[in-house]
Image (tube, rainbow, N blue to C red; front, top):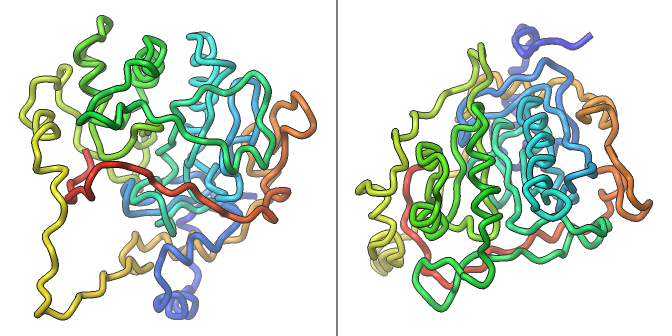
Length: 344
C-alpha cells in the first residue's frame, strides 16, 4: 500500500536531515535513482521544491522517444506524463515527423539538479526538442549524442532562421499551448516574435508562450498545479491577450538582457555563491528523500519502461543505461552571458 507524504512526516528524520544538511540539495536529489513509494504530489514551487510519487515516461513510445537517458530525468507528475503522451500523438498528426523527442522532465524525486535547470523541480515541467522523432528509432547510444537543432540565425540578433523554421514549428508550439492544463510554453524571444508576426490562429493562446533565455533548440512546457493540490505553489497568471506589444516583451530586444555582467572589483574578495540546502526547500522534501523507493517497472507510466518497440536496439530501460557515461551537451550560444531575470 502506498503511503502519503504526510504519513512519512510523522516519523523521525532529525538524524538523517542533520547528516544531509552539510550536503547541497542538488547532490542529495541527484543521488536518488528511483521515486518515492507515495502518492503523487508536487511539493513547493517549480524552481524550489521536490515531488513524491513520480512516474517515468517510458523510454520509447509510438510517437515519442526519451533522450539523454543517462541523465535519469524522465520522471514527472502523472498528469504531466499523461499530457506528454497525448501531445506526442497530436504532434505526429500535425506532421511533426513520427512524433517528439523528449528532453529533461525531472529527477526521480524532483529537487534541484546538478546542472541544466533552475526549475523542473516538482515534476510539472518538460523540455521538447525542436527536432522531430526520426522514422528510424534512435538507439540508446544515439540518444546520448544526437545533436540539437537551433531555430536561430546566429549571424543576426534574435532572428529565427527562415531556412529551418516552418509553419509546422508554429503549429507544434501552439498545440502545446492549447491544452487547458498548460500554463506556459517557454521559447526564445525570437521565436515568440516570429509567432507574434505570423500566427493567424487563436491569438489569446500566444499569451501562454513566454520569452526566456536560450530555448532556441527546445521548448519548455509547464503545466499548472494539479487540481486540489495543497502542496504546490502556483505561479502568477500570464497576461491576457497575445502579449506581443507589451513593454516586458519589448525589453528582450534591447541591449539590457544581453549585456555582459559587470567585471568584478579586483579589490574585493570574491564571494562564493551560496548552495541551496535541503533546509531551503519545503519541509516535506526531507520526507521525500527518506521515503522507500518504488521499482522502475512499478513506477513507469503504463507499467513498462519500454512502451513500444520498433527494433530491439531502439529500446532500453533506465537500468540498461546506467553504465552509459553521462555526457550532457554543453549549452552553446553566441550571445553574451545574460543578466538574471525572474521566471516569466
